[in-house]
View 1 (cartoon, helix red, strand yellow):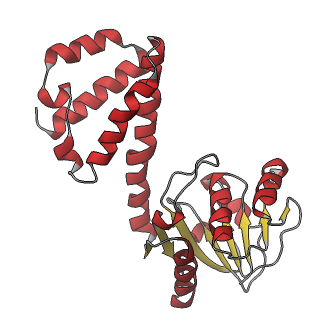
View 2 (cartoon, rainbow, N blue to C red):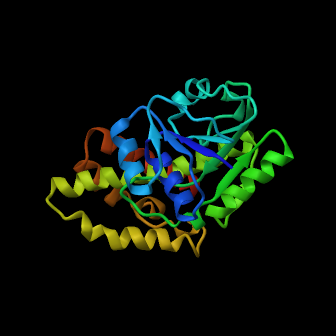
Length: 249
């Protein structure tokens, strides 16, 4: 099967790398950013182009949600399958005469960070059983965790991921601002962060909650609020209010 990956960002890089590691040949990586495409091409030994899109059996679109529809219009071949990798978009956003699908990897991707691809859950959706089996078999080359998912279900998967990953990472960034302001090395907090994440592998997150809000320790809460200002203070108050509402404090 001839496969083309469209995109030059984090997801495109890791999809191309995952296939390459499994000796699944890629026909081309296509995109706008020649510098990034060249880096990927040199590392993975895959041809790239910013001008000519090769004809393929499967196109995997790995671009931002805002660009998926426009990029999909570049594919004019009728007898092919096109998949986007978005967690929030329906397959119907793809605009062309081809068969439409989604191929969503549930993970946070950075080019500088190695990943264990076999642990990444993949959620697939297609228009027919034949294409479903095709994408299932393809994803199974990369991952041990492949599932079918409707767009309706995938929206909630993506929403959960935003809470569990993007929001949590933002809190790390805000926490580092606080530690940096007092010249406290953020490395001191990494064991705490690691243990917090490890804990929810064994305990329900709600049961694992600790801290002044769940204890309703008003003295500590007020002390912390005096140390904060602007956005960090708003976040602190919002998070504590949410914790107290969950535990009806």
